[in-house]
Amino acid sequence: MKLFEPFSFGDKLTIQNHIVLPPMVTRLATTEGEVTAELIDRYLLYAKGGCGLSVMEAIAVEKQKSGQLLRLNDDSYVAGLRELNQRVHAETGTKMAPQLIHFLKIARSGYRQKVEDLDLEYVQRIPAMFAEAAYRSREAEFDAIELHFAHAYTMSSFLSRHNKRRDEYGGSVKRRLRLAEEVVVESRRAVGDDCVLGARMNGDEFTLGGNTLVDARVIALRLAELGLDYISVSAGGKFEDALQIEGEALDPYTGYSGHRTMPPKWMPEQVNIYLAADLKRTLRAAGYQTPVIGAGRIPTAKVAEEVLQSGDVDLVGIARPILCDPYWPVKHQTGRAGDVQKCTYCNHCREAEGAYEDVTCIQWKAKDGTMKVPTL
Image (cartoon, rainbow, N blue to C red; front, side):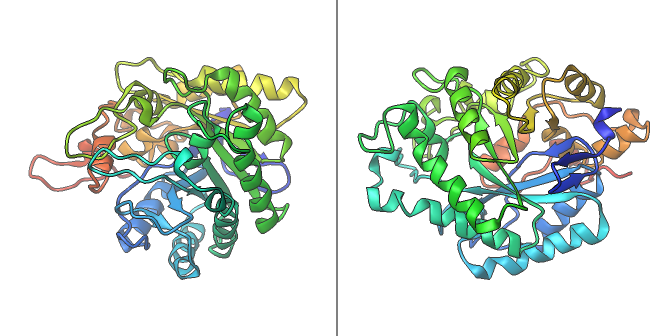
């Protein structure tokens, strides 16, 4: 199967198969953004399962309050992440990447900071924040680096049609792209040309008045022109259609756009693959060979293989099925598909993350209340 053949990002990095584990917040970090033994164990478990590239949960480039979220805004965080990577590299063939994120403030009062609220001087400091975190990522021995340009967060919000700034960072798509361009350029300068640098972006925001696939084509082309080594395509996850619950902060994954980010069981398989396929065709037509990662309800190796054989994407993102059974890749590869604990797409894991609880699969919980993770 093509799914289990090695894949190379040019001459920079080769991974053992075409399977990418997209970021999933575990809530296993400390509230100060530090790595814990439990978090190392989780990523080592995923790696032992056999994915090609594991993109870690979002890691903040600035000191910001957000529960148990990892940080890389200071050199003090490097050692913990280096220990994690050294363990993974010593015991498995999986390659590791951080997903670097900057996010805007929200409050239980219902307040939500928007890109229009940021003063120009602060905005102009953001590229350096990403670049410094990217440099620390290399110091921490990551194999690749992903910039988070998707969903509800700062970078995606600048790219969005919902961006109402009236200066050089808002308005036309060219201006909305400016911050992303600066982040990519500064990050590349920090990590060098030999480092795999990618980005995750939305193929469609699925909100009224937000970006559509038409906008995504322009964004993807510009990111490829800037020399990114891959583009990972997601969707939705916006605050604009989030459900407001009194006394709780807005959750960008509660509305329809949020459902498109993590498609529930009532959505069809491969529901978002057409977005990645369209962007791949757009890039190829313009002469760019930038690898494209697609995700969104790919439950089995058979489905993943169909997506790859169709040419729609270059790599497949498998998130919740690997959380459900971390050995999803190796079991499928060794002809043990019948032994895989199957994800039901109930999104209990997403609800746990939103409640700042340890993120596990509900199927791990035994009748006696103990946690039983699938094994080989």
